[in-house]
Image (cartoon, rainbow, N blue to C red; front, side, top):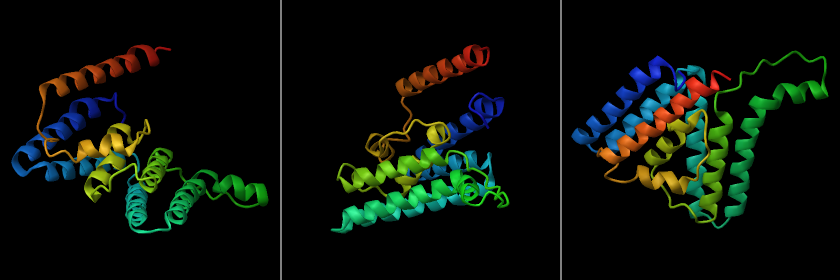
Amino acid sequence: MMFHTIAFVFAFLPACMAGFFLIGRILGTTWALRWLLAASLFFYAQWNLAHVPLLIGSMAANYTIGRRLLRTVHRRTWLMFGIALNLTVLGWFKYADFLLHAVWPAAPVLGIALPLAISFFTFQQIMFLVDTARGQTAPPDVLPYTAFTAFFPHLIAGPIVRPAEVIPQLSDPALAHPRMQNLTEGLLIFLLGLGKKLVLADMF
């Protein structure tokens, strides 16, 4: 489901926003954030359902390491472990076939499918670990963290953003209260991007 498709513009996005604000109004911000996380995982699953457990496992592992970084005096060791773990997983999916055939040219092809957006959510979480180790990111609850990592507008195409710029916004109790200025500005930016994609990018 691409951002410029009819399914996204006229079905997924309106349903996601309506559900978010409606649930926020009735049940509160925490449930609205759960809805956003579920919608983001559903969006990712449209590409390949089999890769959803990888995303969830990556979030669980990095959140656990991030919490550990806050409680240990061996921050550098845990940070290096977290970075190495992330890069190992990324390297397996991106370069396992290449490295295998560099060492053993006659080896059969492994045929490992590259999960969508693995580079984005891997490096985003490495940034989270680094900022946490430096004390630049306050320890988030698991729900804002997972909603930040899986957030569908930037999950598959970036950009990579600093956790301290987004997670506090997701932790705001007033997050699920619609503000007309935010909605109109967001709609304008979305329509400008959509126009550039359909009119300029596709044409050229």
